Length: 346
Ligand code: GLU
Image (cartoon, rainbow, N blue to C red; front, side, top):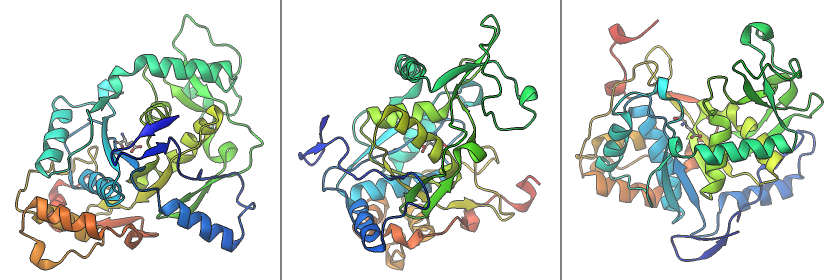
């Protein structure tokens, strides 16, 4: 499939080499590996399509600004597109007004996306179609097993008897119990492996409560939107192999991944909506973006600190060096974005 990129160049839907490597022992030679890495880190100009995909479970906070900014800079540095997708798949966890807050805060910081915003809540038919295709291939199966029945074990063919369809049941993705470890080459974190059989098990792709799982929806939307580069927080790194299994099942090549560190509170907890991270206020001065760049180890010049968001972003697009984050898993947020000690949950 051919896709027209923003720069006007015609680019194949997957211009990049697939990131999958099936076993950790089948490593390419050092020279080939270097060549692969170089090819991977240099998408064809104009063919980069990235995205930011927040769930509207709360307002944007400093941690989510970091993921938005890193994915934005990575795309714009490559002269690529940057899309915005609201992952509103789980109404019980969503907060009224959160989508609006996220969009208006991104705009206030000058993080302008391409095209219109996609809402996952409007994609039910596409997910249903994807599930049907996986079921037809024999890799998705209905499962009436409860957590209690699984007793904390991974699901590995435990409940293959057809569930009682008059009761609620989930759909799971079938994992081969004999599969070799599944590895991918993360642009920042290096080679990352998980064993589908020992670490993942048959995972849920449609929940018993009829809601779609993140794992299925994210793959179907990334594929449908032509996303070929994903920059997101390292807290999602263990989801990547589940997503790669879905790509494999469809026989699609996967995007390339870069997982950035998470920002932490004083007690080491990740800044997150669940942990009640402080909502981000608009800051036209440029200082918040400057602090975010500094946290991302971009070494922005001190003189830029109050020059306004457009100047800070312009500098950052030009000087973006993601390799500064190689191998880093977490860093404390600047003190002004951490909750006071009294506000921290134990
Ligand atoms: N919606 C997910 C979140 O807010 C992120 C999905 C992704 O980047 O793959 O945590």
